[in-house]
Amino acid sequence: MSIRNGCSTSLKGRSVTLGFRCVTLLVHLRSGGGALLHKLPHFALAQPSPPCARLPALTFTERREGALTASQNILTTVEKSAVGDIEAIRKAFETRGYICNAHIATSIFLAERLQKPLLVEGPPGVGKTELAKATAEMLGKPLIRLQCYEGLDEAKALYEWKYGKQLLYTQVLKEKLGDLMVGAKGLKESMARLHDFDDTFFAEEFLEPRPLLKALWEPGGAVLLIDEIDKSDDEFEAFLLELLSDYQISVPELGTIKARTTPVVFLTSNNTREIGDALKRRCLHLYIPFPDSNLEQRIIAARVPEMEERLRKQLVAFVQGLRALDLKKLPAVSETIDWARTLVLLHARELDADMVRNTLNVLLKFQDDIENVDGEVNALLSKAVQAG
Image 1 (cartoon, rainbow, N blue to C red):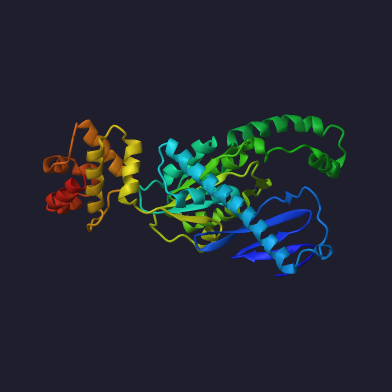
Image 2 (cartoon, rainbow, N blue to C red):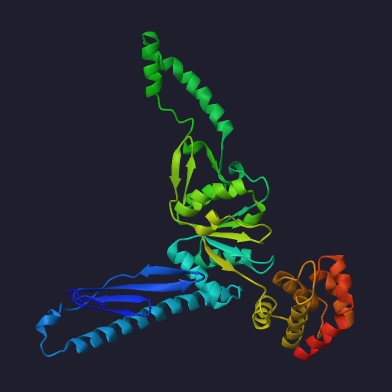
C-alpha cells in the first residue's frame, strides 16, 4: 500500500486509489479463463480536502480505515450496477422467448461493452444461432448473416466488383478521352493529362457489398453472425483475422475500409473441427451445452406455452433420459421444441408408449438410433411419468 496525495488500498484483486479531486476505479472482472480489466469514469468529489498531513486529529490508521470504507462502498455500487445490467439482459432475452442462464447473459454483456467478437461453441441445436437473433432484436439492430461452407471465399463473403457498371464507365471514359487530348503536344503531355483525369474505375460506387462489408458499412451498427465457422476452410479463417481484431478490411484497389459503427460479431461452431488459436485469441469464448432439466422446462414453457405442465415435465424427463444413451445424434433443444409442438397438435395429455414410438422420428434423425431406443422406451417412459 502506498500514499501519494491521498490514500490507496487494495481489495482482493481490485485496486482503488482515492485522491482529493477524483476517484479512479479499476475493477477486475473475471470471466472464463482470463481476467478482464474495466476502467470506469472518474467520480468527482464535491470539495477538495486538505492533505492527510494537515489533519492532526486523525491518525494514520483512522485515515486508512476511512479510505477502505469509502472504496468498499464504491465497489459495492459498481458491482450492483454490473449485475443489474446482466440481469436486465437475461430478462430482455426472456421477453423475446430466448431463455438463458447468467453465464450467457454475462458473455453478451462483456462482448458488447468490450467490443470483442463472441465465439459460441456447442452441440448443434442448443441455441447458438438463436442467441445472435435475440441479441439483434434486443439491441434493435439488423442481423447480417454469413453462412459458412467449404470453399467460401471473399467474393461471396466480402465484396464483388459491379463489372457491368465498370464496362459502362469505360465507354463513357472513351468518349471523354477525345475531348481531354485536344491540344496535347506529344506523348508526354497526353500522359500527364490522362493522369490528371479523375479515375473512378475502382471506387466504392462500383463495389457490391457482401455480408462482411455490409456489417461494416451499416450506419447505426449491426449484429454480424458468421454461422458455422467450423465448416469453412483454414484460409477463410485466416482471412477473418483483420476484421475480428480491428473491425476493418483491406481492399487492394481502395486500401483499408474501417467500420462506420463497430458491429456486434457472433461466430458459431458445432465443433466439427478445431478452430485456430489465432481466431480464438481475438474472441471471447462461450460454450453452450445441452440444458439441464429445469432450464429445458423453462425453454419449452416459453416456446410452447399451450403445453400443460404435467406433460411438459414428462417430455423433458424423457428427452434427458435419451441424452444419456449412446446415440449417433442426441436430440437437441430445437428437436425437443418440435416434439412438444407435435404432442400439442396430437392433443396428448400425457406420454404413453404408442405415442412415443409413433413420434420418435421427430426427436431422432437416424434410423439406427430409433431402433436402439425402441427397446428402452418403456424404461424411459416409466421415469418420465414419475417426473410428471
